[in-house]
Image (tube, rainbow, N blue to C red):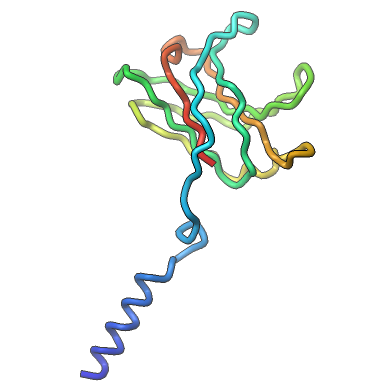
Length: 135
C-alpha cells in the first residue's frame, strides 16, 4: 500500500511540474491586430508594424471569408529605404489559421530593444484580412 501511495504522489508531481520552459511560460501575449491594406506604391498588401521583444512570434489570420488561401511574408522594419529584413513566410488555409516564427530575437534592435514586424502579401484575397500578432 505504501508503494501505491508513493507512486501516486510521484505521478501528481509529474503532472504539476512543467515539462519544458515553453510549458512554464504564461503563453502568448497579444500585441495588436492590423488590417491588410493595399500599398499602391509597391503593389502589395501589408499591415502596420507590431513590436516584439524576440523569442517567437505568432500570426493569426482573421477574416469573415472562410474560403481563403494565401501566403504572408513576415518582414522586420528598419528605417530608411530598402533596409527591411525578410524573416520568412507562412501559408493560411482557413479562418483562424496561424503561423509561428521561431527564434526571432536576432531582429531585435534599436534603443527600444524591440523588433518591429509587419506582414506583407501580394494576394488580393488578403484585402479583408486582419492579422493578429502574438508575442
